[in-house]
Image (cartoon, rainbow, N blue to C red; front, side, top):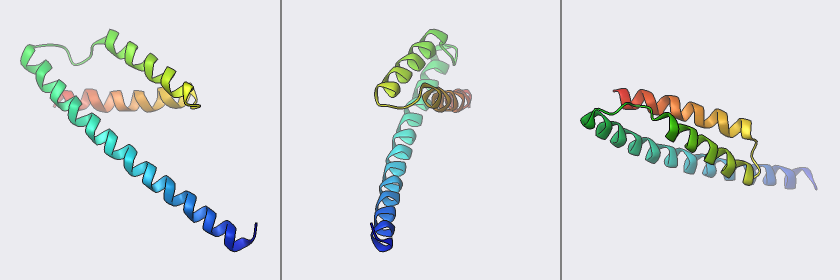
Length: 93
């Protein structure tokens, strides 16, 4: 493959990553909106922010889904632990 052809392919792939990242962020924003609503309901009902059984089930399912899609369990665990930390903080506001 020639230099110009490689450059075009690189740019094309980078554009694809940009689009995928934008979709990922939109999905995360939508998720966090639902998290906030759940936090409001939990607050109204006097429920704790964290339901440990639910969290354990969610994490296990997300790891299973991610590994099925060819992603490492470590990557999925790290991503969802960060999301969970942010979700707990949002629900406490």
